[in-house]
Picture 1: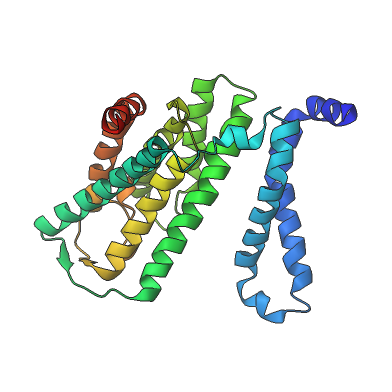
Picture 2: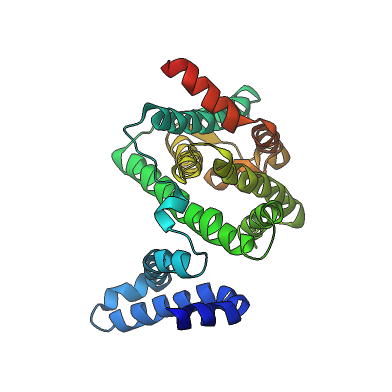
Length: 282
């Protein structure tokens, strides 16, 4: 153990930079080997490679937390006990916030005449919505709000680490198919989203489940509504509702979404939620 600690201390910068390239390479090696007995995997090689990379990430994260950050991963994640009414209340609050964000943007699009209401609900759409929301929310929160933030906190003060994780989170999501203006909108919106999602650490009952719930709900609700209830017209103003086309519009990058995220970031929600939950439960 002493040798491991000495090695990590002497090579901390290199190890941090190489962590994801190494596990991505391992995921690529695994899928490349599995293609021979299972040739059908070749059709979605990049997808399965990413899945194996994430599995390696999950398996290695407890050891990384213990030896690099000197923390117990499950304590760090704040695994809340769902039998506590207060914890359930906080999760419901995050879902309601996400619901209000998406419904506000959708209603504005309907009222302004940039979208039409229709009903085409199906089991596949519901399942895809749930799967996409959980996958994105769970994976990205572990990567950005846990691994990345803790790594940055290892080298910088908390406030700088928080800003840097939000900047990196937004840069990673920039799209090559969008112009400079649209990417600038995304950059601002995703930066604010990254700041808000990391505020779970300010809460007395802090748990990674709170940003996972909000993030997953935003993604899942938008996918469900735009695929089964709302037809977005091609002339919708991207500056207001976000860059992209049709169901690929990202509302986080629109002026309306940015304003809502600014309000969420400025609102002292962690203290308010604790106070409100105590009043309701008592």
